[in-house]
Image (cartoon, rainbow, N blue to C red; front, side, top):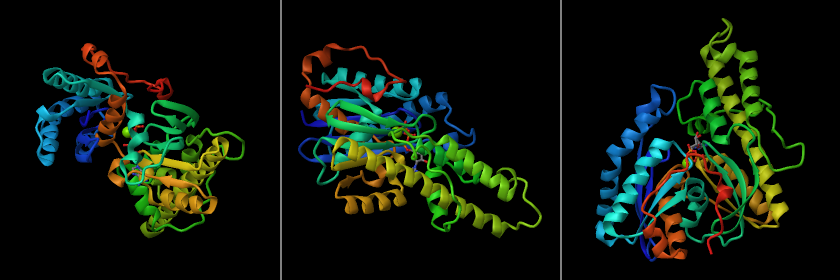
Length: 356
Ligand SMILES: Nc1ncnc2c1ncn2[C@@H]1O[C@H](COP(=O)(O)OP(=O)(O)OP(=O)(O)O)[C@@H](O)[C@H]1O
Ligand SMILES: [Mg+2]
């Protein structure tokens, strides 16, 4: 088992990648559908599925060409089985399963969040297990104790909005585009301290998160200081004052999220006795979060590991890598016999079992 093709189609990104056990990540390619969904204000599942169908064969050929390889050289195919949009997942599943059947090689359905979780291990000097993983993406905010491949103990999670979702919703209030995270980070760089916002669920013990109240606090702050959602601007507020206020709000919001994540990471490390933290998912690309975590790591004496920026958000490199790790440990026969496939649009990470 060496060369694995990874396929990712869980939401609005179509991606393909090639991972080799011997040579590492050989190629990865991605097509984002953000522009196609932008005018609808959210992802339209049917459009997403159709676009995956259009883009997947070309992206697969592209990574093979980039690596100078042919499909005949593949040893296995990994595809995202869930969680995600059912139709979108079906496209990747059908494509991967059919190709694997045609090539007479194993195919394996991967949990999308396991992909995110293993992504930092694609980088040089990967941490050994066990470690604590902070998964902060558009749909999830999870703290997980990882003891082995597939052995994931949930330490805490968001009881409402995910961190990335909060970035996206606050970005909308600030009339910034989607995805909100990068737009807020950019605006926050021009902001100043002064907008005090809550650090939800940090006053009491525990490792769960809540970001919905923080979002509401931002809305209230904006209503009080610039009229509802910024739409009813008072005569005395000129555009410059509003831009300054919004930059300060972006700064205050980002600090509140980063502080909250940092407090819980420290708690999780203390609770597990672990000295290694990995951070993955789109919010893991946030420069301020990385700056604060790096400082805390130096101060407290733990190591912190991230994927390179483009592997924080959805990609197929993480799926190919997770597939490689799992296929190396699985027997070939049962995988080949299992010719049918199913997707898991809802699939808790903790339902995975350790791979013996
Ligand atoms: N620099 C950044 N700072 C903060 N948030 C960011 C940054 N870059 C991306 N994000 C956020 O990351 C999210 C996208 O990440 P990702 O692609 O991992 O999530 P997803 O695939 O939509 O969700 P899930 O993996 O949970 O299904 C968006 O909410 C986006 O706003
Ligand atoms: Mg994702």
